[in-house]
Image (cartoon, helix red, strand yellow):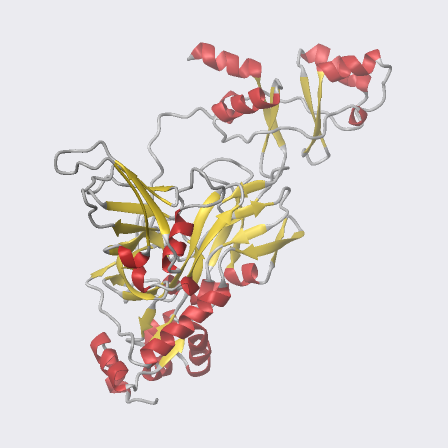
Length: 501
């Protein structure tokens, strides 16, 4: 350590590879680099350090494997193929198929493509079944056999979207449990979940994509892999990578099939990327701390694409295990494994130090700016465009006063709100009629329905109509993220909309 500064200014990836070959390269993990830069500064750190290793290990749904199974005798053109009863995509060639990790089994619950891939990597036999209409050159119409990873010609993992730079956290304002790809979200802001490993994650350590690009050699599930471009939905600072690697060289230690209850199957993918420290700027990038990496907590209780932001937050807060929402302390849970990500960093460091892993120069940079557009759709009518005014009453309102309001205003539904306008319940004309008939003339809080089915102003009207049908009710209070009543949408409102159309 302590090289001449003039040499450092000319540092290149080729030069670093020479030092790796000689066994003199200085390699540190992203965790260690933070301390070095803090103690010595970016300039000195750039002089002393050649490579910083990074790591991430989390559920990456946009992943899968291309297989070439080889030809049978007589040959078959596989038009449909199943691996352990999980269907793979066959619209490629006669005996090629792509198995996505989220594809589900038709016969085994909570089993999918990720599990099949894991079975292969663990050396187990997998049942292959295929069907065809048959042709002159591919006369066979069906086949059933068992294969292992050694039996296939190629098994190339190709993941369209991996290594998320950062991810938006999730919570739930609704009054019911939600099962999502962000895990189980408890009602009434009962918890927060987040993904990503923050300050040790690859793309956070090279946010300008100076050394991470097309052709960069990476650690992929224990094997050497490569970046083949920007990932789908790449939108810095929420960047992603498209990666590939040989499944036959991978280890089950760095991949795991997983199930998100009520949502489906995914796979934890382990990725490590070496960051060459070419100059002080790269040293500064790799000194990034969790408190500098910001994201947002979104409300999944609002079922629309543009979910409302509950608050901004940084990874230091998320990793602390608790955040504050509306003045309350809320428990936070990670969906990524920092423990395994750290193992990946350490293993990649060991391989480089031992001359087993060399760096590669990217042949094309990944864009630092990208527009991520939503799906083009026909005009959608949302609840706020058709909702009617809501006449609100308080829980202390008498049954008699509520009955007068219903008659005077010619309405059938009265949302019951507290002093801040937040929904407490709802009273209908039928509730009032029953109460009067039974002589219950006290406060409406004694007769109101407290478990109220609601919608949000940006929900499509079709969503509201489905709720009315499913729960056999005639109106839904329209509420915001803080459960304040904004209006009502009724079956009459929807009927008028249909007439206009």
